[in-house]
Length: 355
Image (cartoon, rainbow, N blue to C red; front, side):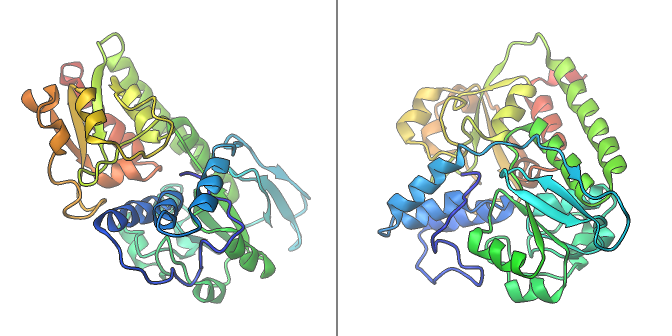
């Protein structure tokens, strides 16, 4: 699901072709738009068209993408207007940007949160309709939603850099921006440590390296405090319910699975080789988790996650009243507040460690 480096016509910057959406389609759109990830949504849509095989191949290719630990190189060092810096983004692409970024656009809520957290929000000239935190982000000019940004609006804002998350904007879109000398940087975190690296990279891009380093230091200290508190305690088996109808969860390559482990849990779907797999009722029934974590708020839509999935009704988690609601945005946006989500999971699974 993470990186979709498509060369076909799967994504149209000005909007998808209209289609009749099933409840599952609408659910996937809600999650994809919030996280800034198009891969899961596109695969689901293509399952109804001849492009299914193409989409599947593209998504498989995504698993080969690494480089999230890449750090920038700078060239040249002069402060002339033509000075530039070279980076390798988390999709493995070389990205050349001006020495100083004065105007940029964020196309994902997590990147908007990172930018404001490191003190660069005043230079953000555009973001998406789903960028609602912090409050100041609501006042920034909107360029569309995460899945359907408007090229015309972005160009009119004259940004030097556009930040995207998990390649929600595909190659054609990126090329259009590059033709106008607008750089595009892709982030693609899969666990908490790679989220920290993304924060540092965004700080380096936006000339806020010191602030980013300090933020990462604070977040890492909080995460380590949680891990020390639960160290030595028996891990609690956990089922993360991304949605109940249809039943989606977190798999091996999801940052949520990493959070659960750090919080003293053990995800019962940690060995599933997808980030956000759809699970059968039989598989959920066999999992017998000791705890269920669900999302509160509207991250997945009002009706998507209000009840425990029927397949989990007889699980030890439900029988022992160990069903926990965690703020949806805290667990679906790989940014600074992911540590808030970690702390809430740990307190739910091991309240005895935080008395």
